[in-house]
Image 1 (cartoon, helix red, strand yellow):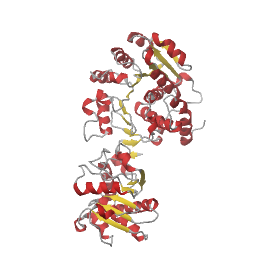
Image 2: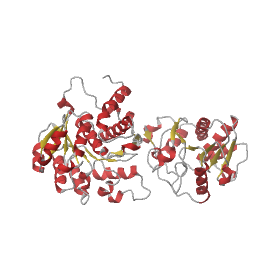
Image 3: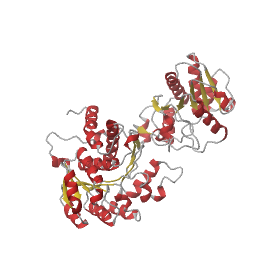
Image 4: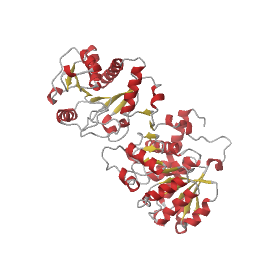
Length: 499
């Protein structure tokens, strides 16, 4: 579940070599793993390996030699002169007893499989010239493509396309995934990703201390809330969702339903009086209380049983919303800020951050999508070239003093201390109106049960994605709370929890 940047992976290699494993032994294992994957992708027919001058190319040479030894028809197209290769890559090339083909697109021919061993994960400049033309030719060839470590043209740490990138059918990477295997657009170029064991001991992670993890249950199992047999509803927390005016109440109800399904013992919608009847008529297990002003809200939150709050879904972009946020923070209620609550601070984001920092014991989660993110963090926006979503979110979390969750197909969750998860389980049909409101509610429901903010956000994101997968194509936001029991059952089964 650990995700390593390119520099962290290089360190894992160095630590392994320093402990006595030759670098060439790692290359042999990597190349053999590529050969195995190639045999699965193409049972017969010619295979062409496109190799670069670095260790990625060395892996390609080892794979080519292994495939040839198994009787496959293999050719190698090399970016540079064979004699110019150095180190382990040169050793690997010496194991290839056949000529290499000149580096031009015509050398690809019509193979059954192309193995892309051109550039490794450390690529940090735009692809130009002959490599650019070769990648164009690989993508246009029509043959399936197996990428070694990462598709050539993808930066391993940021997931960004460096001018052009191979579109792979499958990717074999080594030891642990890199951010680019999970972040967009890199993930879209990888195809199916296989992680191969090449002899690097997991103990190197104790030295590296990675801070990024794939958002999977193993990464937060210890924090997952399980009700005690003797628990009652008040022991499971009481979440509050702030509703907007009468014309925009649906979002708050979606959040409230999400909080209840996530396990909060009780949920109350704090509703303007003009919308009270509408909210009450549409809710059953969720309670409704009249709250119009920040003063009333402060009095309402004085009840210590209310321990988590959602502000934003349908709340309206207004001074009232800002006042409600400050009130909730002053009352030290764990808080999820979404949608209108974020945009309400677009003109003065530092006021929000200062208020968060003054409420030091409060767990706060900000949940912007990419359109909302620059309203609070304009200088960290996605218009900043060369900065990944993960890097921007890390900077934002540190600045805000809160957990920042940036939504999307590759949702990232980052804590102020730099810990991060990247999710890859959200299906395309989760992009539907109101889905984010449900997510905000799920996270609040977890906060109400005492889960820390980083874990609550990560669990919520994973469950949200799994709920969408459970519901299937045609999903609408109202479906998400209703499939949560199936997601819980799946987690209980995986964790060995009786129910």
